[in-house]
Length: 241
Image (cartoon, rainbow, N blue to C red; front, side):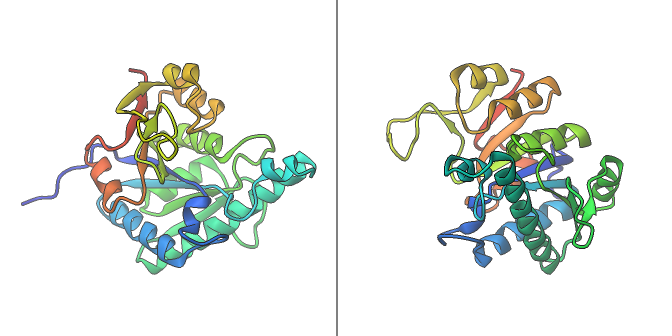
């Protein structure tokens, strides 16, 4: 029996830096990054073209540093460097899992990774390499959520996936409110109007304006990535409606 075909061919996967911590207090949990890498390589081998954006909150978060009194631009630059560290770690895990990866940075750091060039990024993905987009957009005041929406738009992704520790978007925090209701599907405008802050408003607006559907799902659910790529409606879908 042949494998079920993929519904989505080119995807952009957004991982938070905090997701890499697992149960650790700081940094990267090797078991978590290895498990994620195995799922991503499986998806690539099934025919998916994959771009990846990882946050830096497990190391530094620019907004948090600014709130503590640091200059915001300096803090954001530190956060960008943290995402490069995470991207290099993930690239290593992907290659140990049998995949091929290229780290591309929005800021020049040529001794450790390539510059982000749109056409080269698309070529990497077409050639079966997993492209990791580091350093956010390269600009302060923009989150890695916005970077993910921007890169998804630039490379023509069929779907932007945000992997979280929650199985979708809720009308309240499900950890604090057991009666919180999960949405199966929302429009971009619904999310912005209701201020459902699973991603920042700029990221949702970029997805809306460039018609990139977004799915929020639980990254801790084994096999979830392949199930989504084959069309299963896990988590919450955000699109034009």
